[in-house]
Length: 319
Image 1 (cartoon, helix red, strand yellow):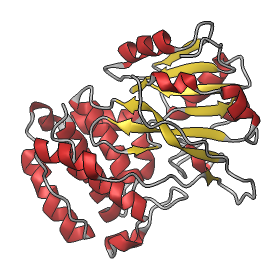
Image 2 (tube, helix red, strand yellow):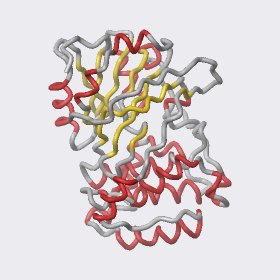
Image 3 (tube, one colour):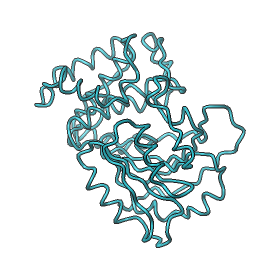
Image 4 (cartoon, helix red, strand yellow):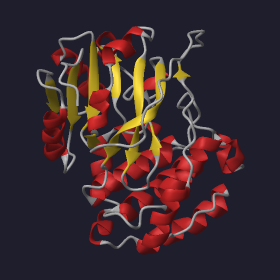
């Protein structure tokens, strides 16, 4: 690991993740000596917590680490001064993350290096019109991954993570819903459909993996089949708490299997998506066989002629 101080502050953002404090201490232990590692904890709202991170940061760029992330040591081997000198200044750099439940490697939960001025302006998740940062700011998606998304610390955490992705992976590129998905699954972006099927089918080998699959199945069927589903709810953790502790309070004791299995048939009937209940051994095997599609480079809320710079990285990670 390089001992060179990072040219940006790190802000670790946590809310209620069961493993947040452990992951934060792990991050501190890996960051190069002299680097500033700050923490925002318990701030309600994704936009609000990120704007708070911008208030704390003292550098031109700031690295945001989510509360359920474990960062690999390889990340701190990057020559960030060289990297930042080769790309346009006004881009958010987004690295992929490996999901501990289903083995997916893509942008969900990954590390993001923000221009601090962008971070002060975030207004995406609470405006009722969009669900992701890339719908407000230009994003450079990088293929290499440098963190593990540990979103299975509790049944609730896994359910919430699965539900959110079950909804988001069914949306158009601009974050809007497609009312015609109920008539044809082929209208869904191929990469998103593959990820969605993996969220809904794989994870029986991991603690609380069934809750993530259950959440993904439920989120998918609600966003596709319920015309009045309020999309903004997936960013409202108060709503999630009420949903979990109210309508779905019974699943906390493991009483989800009847509905878990029923959703297999409902999803096929109403969406045409074919999923299966893979067991632990099958889940482990499938994770090792499914190829990872390349990410698409530059994402921008408006057309851009800028050339995307995508550095390749070593895929072997030192935790």
